[in-house]
Figure (cartoon, rainbow, N blue to C red):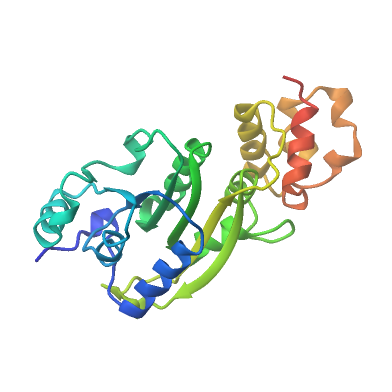
Length: 251
C-alpha cells in the first residue's frame, strides 16, 4: 500500500458516498480538460479516469503515491506530473478545470496559484479546511472576510457547497473540511493593473483594525486620502469598492 505523510498534510478521503458527491458537483458544469491536484490514494482519481472524452492530468509531489497510482490504476500512466502544484506551469494550453482534496498546509498558496492561472481556469471544485473555505466565500462585514475573499471573488464566483465530516478521512484531520466551487465571473471586473490591485487589497487587510486612511496611506496622495471612503476599514468594502479604490491610484 502506501504511508501517509504528515509533512505533506496527507488526509485521504475514504468515504465513497462523499467521493460520489464531490464527483457529482464537479460534473454539474461541463469540461473537457481536467487537472486533479494531489490524487494521493486515488479516491477521486478512479472515477475521474473513467470519464469519457476528458483530457485528464494529475499533479502529485509524493513519489510513493505516484508509484501506487500507476500500479493500481494503469490508465493514469503518462498523465501524472510528479511535482508540486506550486512549482508547475499551467498543465494545458487551453482552458481547464481543477479538482482536488487540497493539502491543507498549502491551501492558501494553491488558491493564489489558481489566481495566477485564472485566465485558463474555467472551474474549480475543491476541498479545503473549513476555515479557509469560509474565508474564500465570506462577504463584507464578516470577521472571516479578508485578502483571500476579495482577490478570489474579484475573478471568480464562489459557491460554498457542503461540509465534510472528519471521519470521512484517513487519518481524520483535527479540523473541519468543506467543498467549494469557483467559476469565472460572468461579468469580469475592469481591473486595469492587477498587480497594483493585489498590493492594495493586501495592504488594506494587513492592518484591518485601522481605517483605510491609516492602513493604505503609503499608496495614495494626501488629497485623495481626504475622501470619505478612507474613513472605513477594509472589511467594510465590497470587491467592487476595492476595484474603484484601485482606480484612484492611477496606473
